[in-house]
Length: 283
Image (cartoon, rainbow, N blue to C red; front, side, top):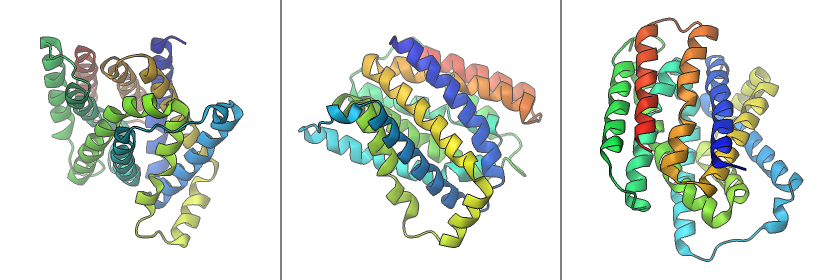
């Protein structure tokens, strides 16, 4: 399948994910417990896809040490991200969180320059500048109440983590193949979510509150991420990741329409457009 089709299919899944995780996070009392349920569900779904599609018959592990070093760093980043993702989603509007999330594109871009020896162009410099400006626009408004300073800080931190992980995804998909790598990054980070422990009563409370919704959300994330990995197997990271980030603009627009996030609408839309433009300049 064409990598552009794979990337834009991923956009649809991630847009839906950005909207629904906000709805789920608002009702959550224990964000780390819901993160655990989310990741366990994702791991089970990922394993199911692996066996149903027959990918288990192609299982093979790479011999190069760099494959396992990059996997370890990615697992740590994904683990910390998953531990905090529902905290950020609870504290911030979906449109604000996804716009702050553009920082991840910039981090992945810088990492790609170093790791994959990508060339620097004026367009890429302009793209990074636009993303930082968009980040500042949404980070300096409405820091009281729902969009707290703590929420912005957590959003920035998780964006940096996911940017580093994205930077390494192309290596992981190349060494392990997309399906095997997907399973590894859904299962191994669970250790970082649980550490040092989570009370069973908290897990039970979140399971009762979220029920089937957390499974649906996890499935959406698994399919979106797998499509992104498959696109990365074919094309350059600096081409795939910016396209995937168009989910941000859709999230901002749909967040205003369906989640009634009407505060600073004009600035959100302007920041979203700037962020998307910046992402494309990074290609």
